View 1: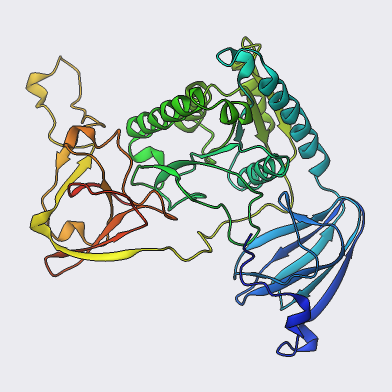
View 2 (view 1 turned 180 degrees about the vertical axis):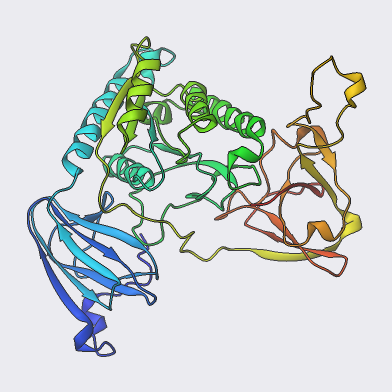
Length: 422
């Protein structure tokens, strides 16, 4: 496991660090150290005891380097001594945390995984492990709780699937995408989620409100793909999934949460930080005996994400615009009012695939490079570069060319692009 440039304590010597920046913090039983990194990186190590960051245990005597502006918490179940090298913007200890309730939830999920694995019939509902969806308002700790549950499960030998529907954050890949990936090891506290072969669908906007119907279609496509994988893999089916959602929970956002619960057949709904949302979901799901709705306290040390801390692994190709076919999903010409029923308003088809002229309007847009062989396959096909930390995309220039950056993609594809503002 990589730890963001950490080196063994015996080799560090701390010779290059000013003694005035070194600080030790003693953590008592079931308490946590909450840290906001400032404008410069911060180093941290575990001197003694046991501690973890969002479900991943810290290695003893190994310096970890955390990037600027990151917010995180170090928790101990027993006691620990932490040493910091650097000047954080904020650091304080807290002894009131919801970690006990979180680990109790994990124990229940572990029981369900074991029962699913022991099920004699691999095709029955009993063989299905927990499908957990984490919901709540913005900054309630959904991503943090998801990471904990995934890391705890991986520590116990499971390989749960992480599903990220929060296109505004992009925990797996860049914002503007929904994605899924198996988690085989506890998540690295610095580098984040390991991505060998994530399944990515490109939406192209940072909020579903720009094209709600397209968002729902992509969520359905992702769910169906995972369902096929689960049907062919009993281990993944028993391990289940953890689904992270966006913070839009009112109006259309609430409808999209219900759509996700139905589409992924979620059987555990964890509600963070809002009594109203819990009450609404409990009432609407009360007639489904196989769905549990659980209210959990928001953590005071939730993590804020500022994008991937890892460098991407792109390579660049330069091609003429004439070599590309660029499409936009949604919009297009509308029927005239004279052709519509009386009183009806013209409405653009949100799933319409429209060929786009290559002009200055494409400047500074991010486009996905699709594996689709024909335009009508664009929605259902994932973009190139899904084997890398991110996805294939095209950043247009002013000189009649497009600079294409791809991850470690496999195979070839026609130059079919999906257009959107990520």
